[in-house]
Length: 198
Image 1 (cartoon, rainbow, N blue to C red):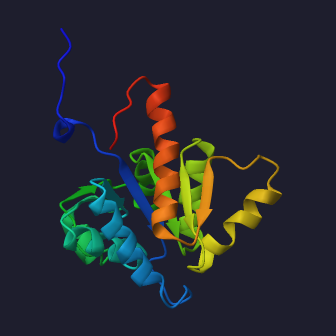
Image 2 (tube, rainbow, N blue to C red):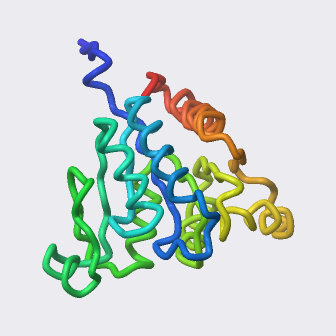
């Protein structure tokens, strides 16, 4: 006998915010846009997933928590002590931090694979790494254009790689971008026979 779950017991969509830890090269308003993106993810009842780091992911986490959302972080460190002392990363604005012990590159793989979609805001090389992992996995990806760094280079990079457009959507508008990303996630849910709005 199938059990019908209420909406509050259904799995929520998990959105990874990928972006620069060092925001010095980002657009001047990129941190504010990241914070608003976190807020909008929380408003929509989705879970924010971050690399448990500073910069863009931190601002997104701050926005989500201030809006009452849920934030999960995946740390490159193997313990809270290493997270704080060795990597010098924050723990605030997160409900849960998973200490992967896989350094940054291993953490990036787990971060993207544990999310339903990845959204790129600004970024540097690590953000490009997260993007390419998600692209190779055929995962929905949103790019918040106009935030500088990696985000503003991705459309050009993708067009030159001779691999097609992937499942990447682009917009300068946060709500529009999230709408498109959710539409891509829902295609997966329908294909898997489990379609319930996140």
